[in-house]
Image (cartoon, rainbow, N blue to C red; front, side, top):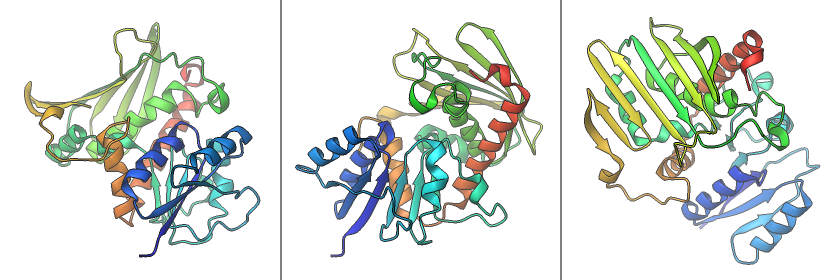
Length: 311
C-alpha cells in the first residue's frame, strides 16, 4: 500500500491539534512538520522517537511538491510565502484562519484544493439548523460568543494585530457561521462597546432583509468552556442552536448525548474530527474558500469603519 505524505507548517496550538487528529485518522500516512523555532524542532525530533511525526526543513525550498496534504497553521503574515511555494495544484491545502492569501488568488476562478478551517460549520446542531432553514428568509438573528479568556492580553503575532483581535479571532467564526447557515454573505453595519468586556456588532445579510446582533463577551467568569450559540427567527418560528443542542420554538430536537455516531475525537470534540474527515474525503473546497474570503472582506470593511472598537 502506497503511503500518503502530509506536511504541517507551524507547530503551535492548532498544528499540534491537527497532528493529533491526523495520527488517529491517517493510519497510512507519514506526518512531516516544519516550524522555524529551534525549541519546537527539538520537540518534534523527540516526538519522532515514538510517533509517526517527523521533522522536515522546508525553510529555503522553493518547491514544496511531493505532499498529498499540506496544513498551514503558521501566523497569517507568512501564508503567502508558503502558498507561492506549493507548485503541485493537486495538493490539498488546509489553511487555518485568519487567512491572508486573498491577494494571490484569482477571485473569478477560485481554486478547488484550498480548505479554510472554520470548524463551527461542522458542529452537528449548526448543521441541522442550516438543513432546517434551507435558505428560508429570516427576519432577525441573535448570535453569541462568550469566553472566560482575557482576550485583551494577546501574545506573539496576535498582540496589537487586527488579525489577532477579539473581533477577528472569535467574531470571524460567528460571521462565517451566520453566512454558512443562511447561505448569504454577511456585512457588519455598526459596532459599539456598551459594557465592560463586551463588543456588540450589528449585522446584515447582503441578499435578505435579515438583521442580526453578534455579541462577543470575553473575560466572562460565568462560563468554563467557550459558548457559541445562534438564535434565528423565521416568520413565527424561532430556531436555536449551540455546541450541544438544537431547538425549534423551545422544543429540543437534538442533544449531544443523543449522538450515536462513533467519531475519533481529540480534546477538541467531534466537530474537529468531522472537519478533518471532510477535508480528507473531498476534493472541491471552493465554497469553503468563497465563504472565508467573504468573511475576511466583511472584517476588513469593519476595521476601516470602526477602527476604535476592534480590540
